[in-house]
Image 1 (cartoon, helix red, strand yellow):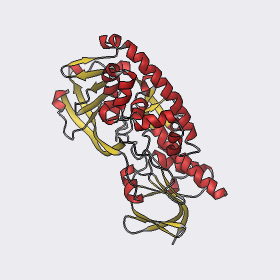
Image 2 (cartoon, helix red, strand yellow):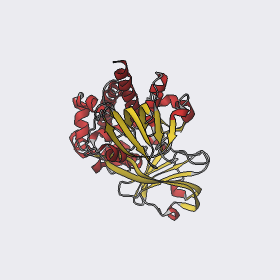
Image 3 (cartoon, rainbow, N blue to C red):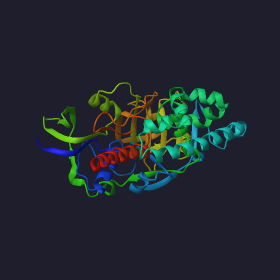
Image 4 (cartoon, rainbow, N blue to C red):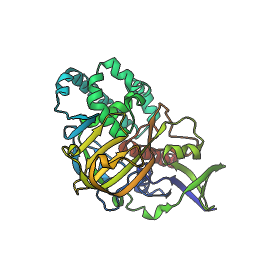
Length: 379
């Protein structure tokens, strides 16, 4: 028996944030992960993110550990519906001007509450913070379609918000909550950038605490947690932090209802796009199209996102070569209104994107768990 103070399972942004906070406080821990970075994945040639794709300008914590690249803009994207296409400068924008103003006011109100929520989550759990804000609690429970109807913004959302949501959440509007609708349309009022993850900066000082491995089972024995690794090795810890994708966390912790998984295929393509797909850097699609988004990269390659494992590349390219392909199963869990507590028993913590999907939100859950561990240590 080799007891440890804290074991963190999972090396995505939440687990690494927890490790960063513990390291800065001088608290010992071991982090076990199959892959450092989790669902932040850069292509082998370093040209494109094949996982989390952009960061927002108000990412106060994650922003310290990324190098921002090209700024992305809705006005530099083109939406394809059937055989036609349009941009943000089309006649549809004029026709839906009043709705766009109503949506803008709603989005600004959401942002005010959302920023306060993220600050609160450093000292209370996400579940507690959402329940404490009636505005956010209502959005979290309500289907997006109800919010759209109530606010009389259907045409604007259909033409200008839904395609971007389809390209970033991989789901149609009918399967999203009001919270997710507004969270993922914040890029309409908050700058967003492609990014390069500065992993070495985030793990500086605790590299030796990271172990590569897969956890198969966790149990409690008295006041200690028993963590069994693939191959049979066992770690013991006073504190346990589970920072895996929520489907894995459900199996390890025996959780009840969680949000439904979303899956997608990400391709890096070398080739020449056909004329209709060359006009703007970002191409978006209607909600019934299996193609989710196409993004030309600055090095000339193309990020191609699809629900299908074998898309019809001939439709989009004069000639092409798949440089790299990654299947995210899941990419994240978005559908549903499950609200999970961080503390899953004495000295046992659940962190990550099981409630609110986003790099900054996940990072903050890691800070919160670390703060709880440090507080209990002082007590």
